[in-house]
Amino acid sequence: MRSKYMKIGLMVSLLCMLLCVCVFAQTPDQTQELTVLFTHDLHSHLLPAATETGDGEYGGYARLMTAIHAEKEKAPDAVLLDGGDFAMGSLFQTAYPTSAIELRMMGAMGYDVTTFGNHEFDYLQSGLKSMMRAALDSGDPLPALVCANYLPPVEGQDGYDPELWQVYNDYGVRDYIILERGGVYYVVFGIFGFDADDCAPNSGMVFEDPITVAAETVKAAVADCEAQYGQHPVVICLSHSGTSGGQGEDYALAQAVEGIDVIISGHTHTKLTEPIRVNGTLIVSADEYGKNLGVLKLTQDGEGVSLVDYELIPIDETVADDPEIAALTDKYKKTVEDEYLSNYGVTFDQVLVRNPYAFETDDEVSSHQHESPLCNIYSDAYKWAVEKTTGKTVDVAITAAGVVRGSLPTGDVTVSDTFNAASLGVGTEGELIGIYLTGKDLKNAIELDASIQPLMSTAQLFMSGAEYSFNQYRMIFNKVDYAMLRGDDGTLSEIDDEQLYFVVAGMYMGQMLGSVEETSMGLLSITPRDEAGNPIAVDELVNYVVRDENGTPLKEWYAIADYLLSMGGEMDARYASTDGRKVVYASLNPVKLLRNANVFTYVVLLVIAVLIAVIVCVVRLIVRRRRRKAAVR
View 1: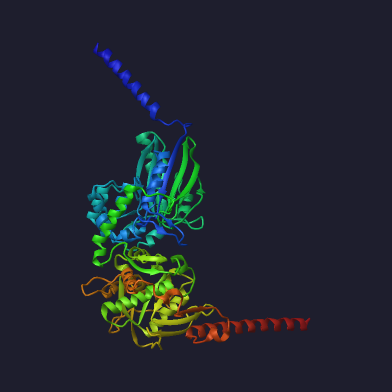
View 2: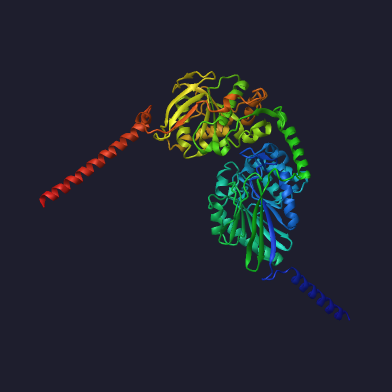
């Protein structure tokens, strides 16, 4: 009898197993519909911002949440993914290491997975570690974090930090994650690109080749999913590598690695209105700062994954706020005020000045060589703020296009607006330094502006305390034909090559000046010096940060904010237009081409003259030989 019941039990068990296989196994001809929602390069833009034209707004997490809800009503099993650089770009970033606002907001919004971008390492390993620990300690829902080729050093490697690995393990950071939604299995993995690595020089992470690691990860993850669940997954790569002009690192990744169905391409802030198709892989991008919610609708069957529809849903003023996320945003504004802005005696939405002038966008600042009223404000603010803080006269203050992260809007300009416009405001990059340059090196800095910008748009300089002009048609590294010091009252004076001048710049700018000799292939050199004229190494510039009487570093953003506040409520009319401090022109007039030419120009002209003379001699020699041959005949 017992044997009989055992046989019946075994048959029932077999029938149950067969039923499970029938229910859950995906047959080759079965078609599954799926939806992928995505963003990337959010950069702490929790709040809406004005469009570049000033006739509307874009972004804002509360509005983005409304759009996410609407899509999930249509597709409840949709996955929500992000391609990295979720931090750094607004005042909310100031609470990154202490409150982990960005990850906690993404958790509240229902993000399933995100990856690291280069800006997640702006606070170095220590900041990343603190941020992740703060996120875990909050107890809030959090998105999963995946990254396969950009990990901390392991034991035995330089920079190994067991505490960082502990928080990675506690958070559950891994190469890939397997998700199941509505019977569809997804493998989601993270990749960090070459340029992203270049943009995070102080991350301390170990970078491995993206293509090699991606190929290995896809193979392992697909095998894992098939072994565990008996299904072939949809493979999605969260890549912080980017595309450019329809090509780029993610294009190369798709070409080289088989088995990736979708690449969500971050880092380059690209907007792709249609997916890029490469060897069966769809590359998609939704633009920066939460301007759009990407919606990708696919089908999966025995033949693979097929595109059904692709849409970028604009997040603008026509989209209503989600009340829960709006309330959470307000809560985090208070966090920023308490933890950061209180140190400066200002508040998040405090109006600094009313501005009637339409300034350039940050892209326009970098696009061509010119004088910029917006950047005149920046450099004037640096000069004014350092003089106010130290009591010392600043000869020249310098800013660069690369630190201009946004424009100042028309109408009311708030503390938040100002920080967003100069958002390298946290860490050593956002601090002002006071150094000395010889007159010769100061002239070289001016020449750097004239000669390097066409090769590196972010290297364009803007100065307070100097005026100069240059001819774009002149020889490189000798384009400047006029340079003088300009006092606050407009008086001009010669720049003495041997004299030391007190110069103020941001830390980023100071580091760039220290690398000019290498950038110009040794043709220009700029050596930061101390008050006694002793050279300062680039890694020692942190010792020359300008501080107030309490030892608080003077930030670029705060120098601008304080300067605007000093205007008494209305933007100074001098910034309605340019004031002639930088004149850029193009002329082939020989006099203008050679005015104040330096040795470099004359050496090049001599070389050209010698080459012409050699060519003339060779031609004459050839002609003579031909004439002699003709005479012999």
